Image (cartoon, rainbow, N blue to C red; front, side):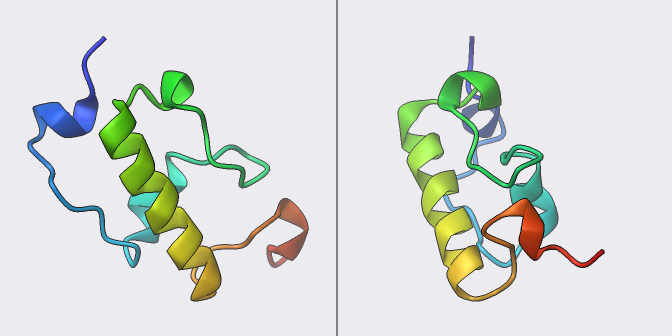
Length: 69
C-alpha cells in the first residue's frame, strides 16, 4: 500500500489546516495508526506532530469531551 501523501508529493504538513488533520484522527480525537491512515512512517510522524501542535495551540481538542455540544 502506498502512502497518499507520498503520491501527492507533500513534504510539509501544516498544523493550521485542521480540516486536513481531522481525517487522520479517530472519532475520539486519538491519532490514528499508520495502518489505519495508510501513511508511511515519515508522514505518520509529520501528521502526529502537526496534530499535537494543533492541540497545543487550541485548534483541535484533545478528547471528544472538549468539543462544543
